[in-house]
Image 1: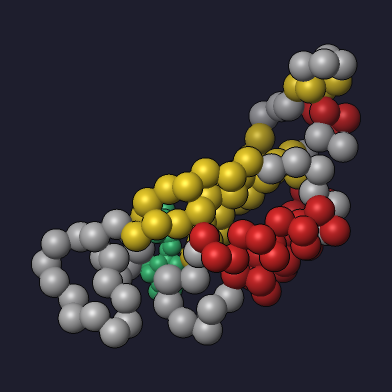
Image 2: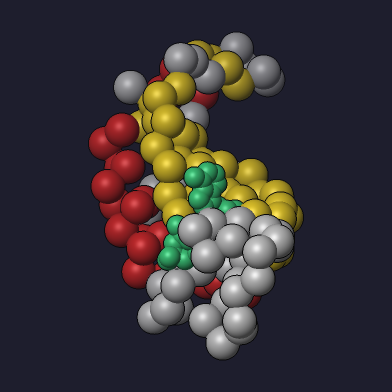
Length: 113
Ligand SMILES: Nc1ncnc2c1ncn2[C@@H]1O[C@H](COP(=O)(O)OP(=O)(O)OP(=O)(O)O)[C@@H](O)[C@H]1O
Ligand SMILES: [Mg+2]
């Protein structure tokens, strides 16, 4: 079974996380600069919360892996994305129906590794 780990992290954490992910067995990932908001509605701990929701810059990682390494990948992200405070990010795990490597027509797990 393939799973997609979709996570939102602080942009400054990307550099160290990307190398650790490959060390954990990841063979590919996509990165997007996004804007996001969580339960503080965009206000950091030092700020006075206002009514209006505010977006903050975040980095989204999309990583499709075999379910065998999902827990390892989550452990890497949890360890390296931590900031010791709120707003460090969030991880979602989503089922993936199939994968196809276009160059070889490999499908499923073979398309990933
Ligand atoms: N329910 C959600 N759906 C989609 N994206 C989300 C959701 N919650 C958070 N995100 C994304 O994750 C980013 C980081 O969220 P954040 O770490 O602030 O979560 P939180 O739930 O507010 O937890 P904390 O209290 O630790 O800050 C958000 O800026 C947003 O991009
Ligand atoms: Mg938050």
